[in-house]
Image (cartoon, rainbow, N blue to C red):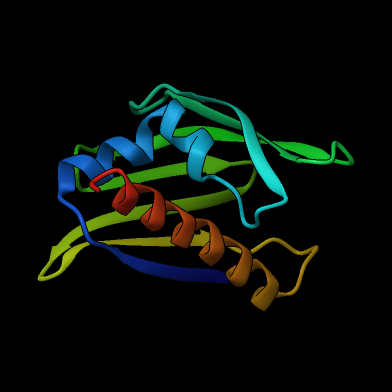
Length: 137
C-alpha cells in the first residue's frame, strides 16, 4: 500500500495545536477539505485502544460519510498513530522555529488518484492551521 505524507507549519504553541487536533469541538470547525463540506459530529477517546469518529457531510445535504478508527499509539504532544479499516495514519507534532510542524503519513486508498488524496488531506490540514492560528487573534 502506497504511503502519502503531507505537512504544514502552524504558527502557534504545542499545547494549543495538540488540543485543537484532539478536541471534538475544534475538529468540527476545521475538518473539511472545502467550504461546501463540514463535520457535523466528532468523538475522540485519545488513548491507545480508544476510538475516534467524525461525520463529514456536504452542506447541501447531498452526501456524507463517516470516518473513524482506533488509536494504536499516543505519545502526548508528540505523536498519534491510528488504524482505520486496513489503513494506518501517523501524525507527528514537531516544534520548529516558527511554530509546530504537523506531519501526517497515511496509507493511500485504491478508489481515487494519489494526487487527489494528497490534495484533499492537505486542504484539511491547511484548514487546521488556519483554525488554530485564528484562535490566537
